Image (tube, rainbow, N blue to C red):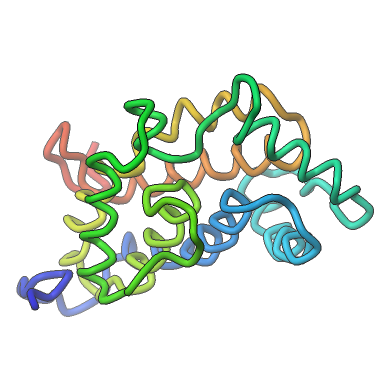
Length: 209
């Protein structure tokens, strides 16, 4: 099997971009859980773990979920992301084409195989936003201490992390509580990651003006 990050000549020291990218992997893991399922008591603990990141990255206090009504949160998740009625689909193929099991689903399956993972972490579609964040976190964790892994991140970002921008803006506009804050955190992370990886639209390298 071809190594995920190829066989490029390694630099002698890890670039700062690689270190900073790896440092945000835990936040992508936490957010993947937020987007994957209706709110439960377990997610309250997950959100508490994300509170420090929220305060640091957004410069605002994390929404306090300790006394939140789980039934109300589950209802809000359904209203926003499942329906009935108008909803915001968290599945890439549905967002892009209105249908499940599209090209983005097949692409995610390919990445799972390249990472030697049998299946995603839930029964949701492979190209669900939660699975995309989870798999991206795995890619970040596996980055070598060189710039050799950055083209793979660019490839994944172009395939699976450009489409959520409008979705996340609309979630933020539709919810002023935890999902709105999670969407702001997700947007900020994606913008920060984009600054650290080559941009296929410009053919540049991280740090170039």
